Length: 448
Ligand SMILES: NC(=O)c1ccc[n+]([C@@H]2O[C@H](COP(=O)([O-])OP(=O)(O)OC[C@H]3O[C@@H](n4cnc5c(N)ncnc54)[C@H](O)[C@@H]3O)[C@@H](O)[C@H]2O)c1
Image (cartoon, rainbow, N blue to C red; front, side, top):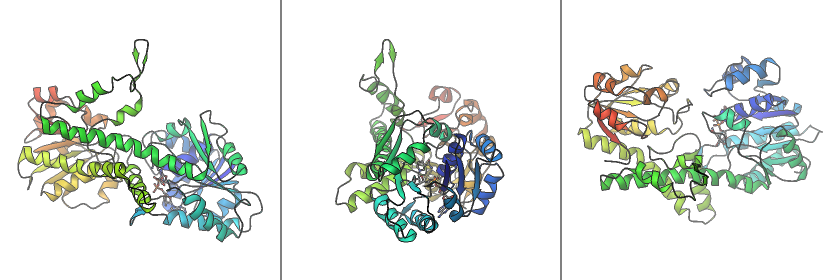
């Protein structure tokens, strides 16, 4: 099947590469010329495990190409997938990129005779596809919906695991405007042996937000309890949740075996959620609910708890070290989580800004995200690839992104390299006993 994908960021590129790998003929469209050239050169513009290998296969075999020409890509294809960004705007979701893409697709459909399905994969608030997108497509194509198909297919991939998540998803949700659109979308996913949820456009949109809000709520819940534990003293949030999850309703048993569902990993205290999805999606959902006259109490509380988490960490550091003015601090990790170079809404940036606001000097390191971080132009931060150089002479270090190479830093190294070996474990990934045994001072989220 010939498929056009508009927007070749994390989602569009992974979708394109994987659908081409599954046998479709894919054209990836992007406005950024650099990205188009990079893809056609068989290189991945983003760091995502496994992606470059697939790209090399599908580009060299001719199953995937990239272009800046939306019109030509849509004219050639039977399905167009919209995978452009949906950032947060003033007071809610910014649909600018989606609207622009819909206009261009609509214009391309104008002279096209064959039936064509437009599928929104970008995360959009309920009613966007059947009002905004449909309206623009009708206006610019001069056709009525039904003459073209419309679908909404939310994406659940996680950065750092995106290829595996796309190839073997937990479910595929397809919201469709009519039976013909659904049939075409089923053909797009014909090679996937996973549960398929066929529903209407609005339900598909709502499923995506509900899933993200649930996971973000678990994170904020764990962080709120972590704050209670810190204030109490002599209570470790890790011990608390380790016992809580032994409830059989959370960890069912099969014989002697305790089944530990992955969702429980979200009940992990840390420095708050970040990345390109949870922060903006929660705020978009909050704004959407308000617009609809609802009171999003839980969603708002989740956002507020998350916003405070980085601040609380900086405050604890200040409590332990005194004024941070002029102090050299080290931040290990900039990506919002290991396995990606994405720094969008990364907790590391919030922590760095908090440290800078208190007058601290910051030396930051990350195995993949340095260039993206440098591009932000934060004053007062030095960047290095070498974590030993980052640690040298520091009076405090904060482990923010638990890349394996940072988690495995020998405890002695902190003592050897730092002027004052104060280690703040923002992810509860380090061994307190080993650090203290080596002579370091340990601060961990959720315990005092
Ligand atoms: N990143 C994730 O992990 C993830 C997961 C699930 C869902 N989503 C959702 O998927 C959507 C895309 O996310 P992303 O992280 O891939 O975004 P991104 O910002 O990385 O990529 C968007 C791309 O679209 C391009 N673009 C914008 N308008 C265009 C147009 N009119 N024509 C051609 N190209 C255009 C941009 O140049 C950019 O390369 C968002 O709605 C996001 O919420 C993202």
